[in-house]
Image: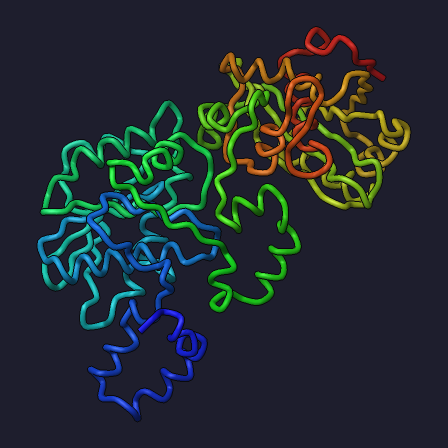
Amino acid sequence: MSQDRLDFLRHDEEQLAHELPDMLDPSERDAVLWNWPMWARASQLPPPGDWRIWLIMAGRGFGKTRTGAEWVRMVAESDHSARIALVGSSLHEARSVMVEGESGLMAVSPPHLRPRYEPSLRRIVWPGGAQALLYSAAEAEALRGPQHSHAWCDEIAKWDDNQGQARRCWDNLLLGLRLGDLPQIVATTTPRAMPLVRRLMAQVGAEDDVVLTRGSTLENEANLPGRFITDVTREFGGTLLGRQELDGELIDDLPGALWTRSRIEQCREPIGTTAMTRVIVGVDPPASAEGDACGIVVCGLGEDGVARVLADASVEKASPERWARAVAEAARAWSADRVVAEANQGGAMVEAVLRAANAALPLRLVHAVRGKVARAEPVAALYEAGRVRHAGLFTRLEDELCGLLPGGTYQGPGRSPDRADACVWALTELMLGRAGEPRIWID
């Protein structure tokens, strides 16, 4: 029976569950309710053939976690000698999402076949004898040595690739995948153009037997709250971020862009690893409340002389009072030494609204003759030199940075790179000063 023919059951699963006790005996009822191939969409079932890696790259809410967990369950119940690696971006996420989450292994297992979870050993044991061990992608060396027959790697685009950590983790996993007749990996992720994802995409359809499943958030609309669908479609529909996070599209770098995603990934580090000696809030005010976002980006200078992007507090379609409060809150939250705000669009007004939000705000207004992209070029050079790092993930800001091209062209999301410009102002103040931006007047 085709998957499409079961749509009427999927949409009426709750009602069917109420009626089944009168229609079937308990074993028959369980056989129906826990039959994943019956309820799954075709894109959530393993592809045919002796593939080595199944890469599921889809939008948020597609059902990637459920798909990965059901595949692991299928392996464990059919191969009692299976030794499965469960690799998350951290041990916390491996446990809270892959094992104990709403769509994790414990939730998808029928009561009579539910595995035993041993947190202290990071181990899951099924009644038939199959076992799974939890690993963190941040601890690549933990996968050096152990052998496995199967693996489920969740959100690989989120794995920390500082100094190639994600790739070392993946390579160690591959080198230990030597048990059984057909070792296999399922990798589930929302797409981001980080090196490991690009590497796997380059292998799709090649001799490495990597098969790809793509999917969008809307494919799972029947199982998602209507309000969620409405909100994310309104907020992100048609944007670069929406194409990535909802449509599951891998966004490539623009040729010649000042920033590339691989460069930013190389500059990423965990939050709070270095104390700051100075903190600046960069602000790019909107021309009007109905126009672009107010870029508000917090950057700090570490004790090691390297700048960090600490936070993106930008607000969209905000009144002057609202964005001024957001600036004041960011300055207070991060104990900022200075707020640097572009004043090309009505300098007196910018100062007035910021002072109204906080009269004691340590404010510097700057006017620039050069365009946003021209101002960004010396800051991009700081990234190339390894003098700037991102303490966390700032998707919208990074999308804008990757849309800046030499010569004054912007091809990123939105009409204007407001977040990127705020970041540039903050980093210029921290790292370059007047020498880095000679054509700025200071009020």
